[in-house]
Length: 519
Image (cartoon, rainbow, N blue to C red):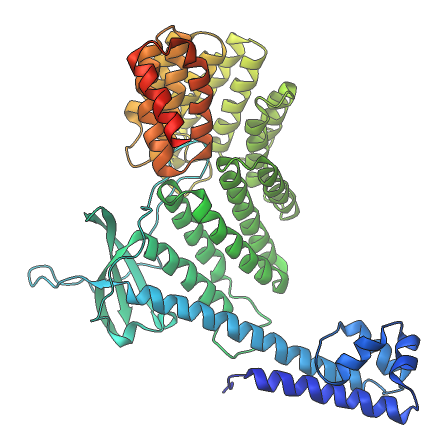
């Protein structure tokens, strides 16, 4: 059994290594200064190491071992110290994670038992979270409200949360005092329990359980083998984060995404062969998600870095499906940058692989359609959009929420068609397309609904209907504020600048005043 490592043990091991260095230096008849000169380190570095006050890289100990003719003794002792330090850091990280899990456990409110509705004894793997891919589209959601309730009756068998065997999220959702909650069913020590939990707590719980499963038990040394099941765990967690993005907002989600990418990278470095490639592909997908979140927060430079990372990793993993998808994402981001020729070029490159799923081809066709509008090519635009509609209509994967490109639904295509008509200076056709998209868009997908309401407002203004533009933009502004989307907010600000000449209309004046008040 592994014993917990104390800070004192780490300190004492460093001092013991330093004492060995001192003894060998003295036996060689060298001062601290003369040893430092031989190995090209400073005297203060040698002095601090001898009293165990600081750490140094392995290269120091290799040079010192050679200079003092220690025959590998210093190197071996340093490795033992380094291993102890690594285990202590891992132990500390896991202890922090378990403390966080305990806080979440305290926020789980037991659901009152109903004799007519017994708890189910059947279990599903992990958190059942259906999702579509996180791009210009609807994100299934979790609310932004924090953890409110503290449950005094929380059974001790649930903590630590790393001991939980099975978790299932029931499809029902309630709003109590304005806070969205869901039912969490837990199997622990052979007993079924059901709890009411806020969706923010659920998000943190899922992230923590994934980290604990990947890291292993406290006090154990890092394993040399990686459990292949972690790939599915990270896919499930990413799906949950995509759902959470719409209501919690990208700023909240991005920190968790970055944390999980660090976990994936650590596991990928340990893995070999096909498992390493799968983890590399997983890391690529998470990186692309980070790019999407950064773009929505208005940080295009960070979005570039994340997407570059995703592209390189997808190619290295020979993930052709995702490589093609990233090319289409690049085409999407090229619109409005001045490199208009690259929009069509990248979109066509995304469609070159014949084994890429139809939904990815549909997403690429949408980008090709946008590229055609930049050349004022109405025929090319219509041809590409019709191809996208055909691909979506004939692909059986459209019912699979986890399929790459599953956001390419008829409402999404209608919204993209509206963008094209607006760019082609046909605002009335744009209004028709945008209205179709907004009417079919699920209300719970608030951010994308807000974006396309804003785009509808732009179309109304282009059609010389400023009052209707202001009314529609006001609804979009509410959604931009509640979701924290910088992307939607920027689009509304651009509209209000164009509406200023029409401020004599009451609806326009009220919108301008509201925007000025909210900043």
